[in-house]
Image 1 (tube, chains in turn brown, orange):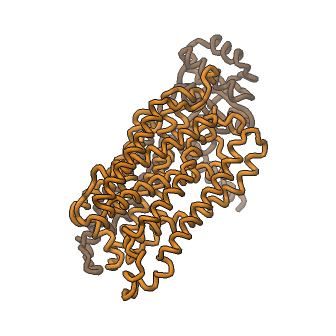
Image 2 (spheres, helix red, strand yellow):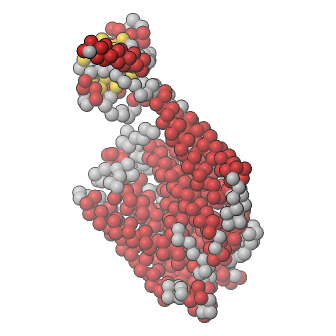
Image 3 (tube, one colour):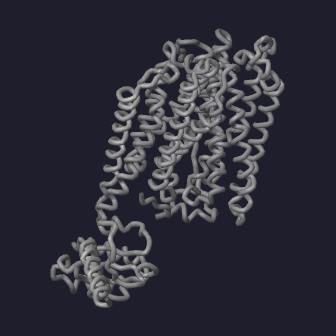
Length: 196
Length: 392
């Protein structure tokens, strides 16, 4: 009796482990540097970009002004996606209200024409917003690999008062000494090998 | 970042002064000339320009009160332009008295005998009559002017440390007074042109146009001062970006309110209400109606949609001019079908009187800007505004 129960629990655990490994975000080995001052981090990121490093990550408990320029991150394509999703919603709304009111279930309302565009504008407008907003959020989740469980943790203080830059091993390209110099120049409090 | 060599001061060149005075002169000539030939047209045109510029002046004060109540830091360095616009209010008061003298030409309810015999109008006599109209005009303008002076007294005294505490009271009072009085003001001046017609959203419709055009005017002031490099280092494209976002938002708001008004009237299909749109969809007026939809909403909406559009001075300048022009056309569209059914009349009478008002408006507001430092340096939020940065 006891044995069968244990095996069942064991089996469930293995299944969960498999699921976890499947949705767990893949991590890379690399170097992490930590700061207590976000301005220093932005300066360090700028220096790194200027000396030819790329593909590194900045981790912060809150959004940093100017980090996009410092890390040379191009503008997201999401606004364009939102625009075209909105257009899709608008087109769908026009087609759908026409199909309902003219093709599938024509009703005479107050003697107005079947295809009374003014009455349908609120519906078309709402569908435009719905497609654009929900579509953008869904796309954002997708390109960020969300929802992910078990995110890699660089340091437990990274969500309260520490700021970090993480650079994967393959992006260092044997310029480790130069990197160390940049970290030290801007007063990193800690530099360590880590996984992110 | 701050350029200490140039003082942030508005300088009116003698050329500009002459231009404003000649505009005023053109206005007086146009008004006098039209009075002789067609007094109804003269007063209609006067009403369009008077309403347009009074709205701009009120919009300026509304902007100032709003910024104070929200404790906004970003707008401190551009606040003076809104304050300057509100300095037109005393002149608007004087012009409203002039307008009252001629109002009998355009409002049929000025003569109670026109109302008697019509059941719907008889009930409105107690509100729509010259005496209560005059009382309302005086009451509204004196309330606005008193509150304007009160707010200006606090914001212009730069040394005041507890300015943000003191200014809350008049700002709150102004916003409440403004919401009620401006609705009734637009009802009195524009809606009552056809005393039969009513629309419960009319006050909001006019407010939407007011704030849209006010933002466009503030942007033009800022762009001019930036071009002359009077405020270099204090105001950057980040401020333009925020103003542009507000302009974009209120362009959409105007369309939303305009459509709400149209759709409910169209849907209910009550003759008393639809007459307003029938007047504006018949004959040549349909083109003005379509132009409003296209150039007051669709074109500015698309033009302001991308991020760069709100940060590009010349682009923003063109959109602001378009919006101001369309706001003028909007007021014109509300007034003129009562003067000329199904035929568009737009010539020297309209342009000349508009220029007259424009001259006076620019004269008073630039005079205000010349008198006071463009940047409120002792404002507690001055540094926050100077280093203002917009990320998205």
